[in-house]
Image (cartoon, rainbow, N blue to C red; front, side, top):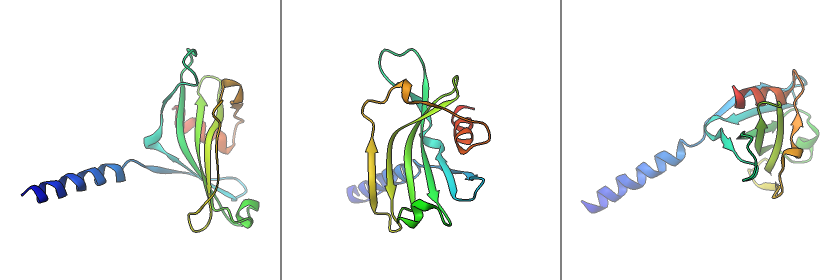
Length: 138
């Protein structure tokens, strides 16, 4: 009986963790070189530092390099980035990233341990950045 209960408990934990990601397709770039996805389950408030009164939003964004993209030619298939948005100033910044190859092997990773508001970049209209910002903020 205890073995059965333990098995159900373990299955429940696996089921919960398996549903913790929900990649939403945000579309392709105008040049058809990038496919962008956002994990809608990862969108949450973000504090850049404990002194800031401003509220930011963070989410994981995946970019897949397609067709003849220069990074794909170098063996990079996709990247996942922790992106921070300032919805009021319409700006985005990247806190951490990891890049994968064709066999899901890690090619490179990066984490900005000193991420500040000054590293946010204004988002321009009709860009992939604007699509990401609008999904995160609205």
